[in-house]
Length: 250
Ligand code: HPA
Image (cartoon, rainbow, N blue to C red; front, top):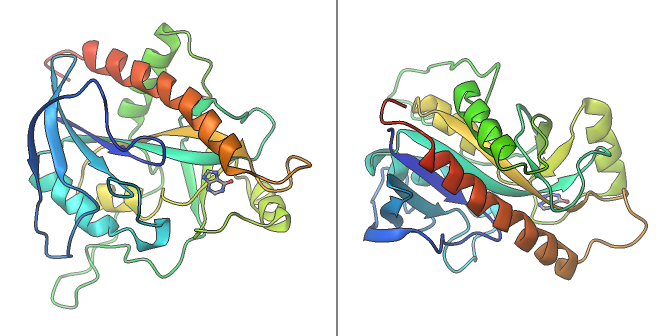
């Protein structure tokens, strides 16, 4: 089986059940990654874990060195990437504590280093990004969730905002008109950089809260933490099922 990298987001800075062999800090031409690459075994498969916001969680979404993270994972031998990310739910079916496996992205972030082809010395390349997530990987994750009878959303459009503040209600209304179902702060440029490195990439989003203006009250951290805890328990099960059920040819 391909070596699977897991990028953990808010609520997932380590995987308890990972039998750790090695922790390595990879220097990259783009600077320092958010965390060491932790290599180990989970359900009989080789897994590399990276904490997107650092361990402990200190790096804000717009400060993450996405290029260094992706480069380090490639150096560590990642052949496919499952990104775990906390999001807000915009459309009615995107209820808190649920998992969604999005199939499209709209990028509203700005000012982030978002390409490996940005150096003047290197030839520019225009990657195809019509379908930003790897469909084979997405379908395998969906199949695992269905076998486990997890109540997941199997599609959706992920809108990536700049953060670290949450959005205004008007921003969320505009995103909904654009077609977004979910809102998060870290989906881009991560997905595009994985595509530039030709590493299959899919995202499992955990819905932490209703997006701004979708509930009467304020969005509170205790609410986010509680929903993330519930969702991350499902994520661990999903990852374990996915790894246990992928054959050596995959
Ligand atoms: N907006 C953006 N990112 C998020 C949210 C949100 O409401 N919840 C969790 N990550």
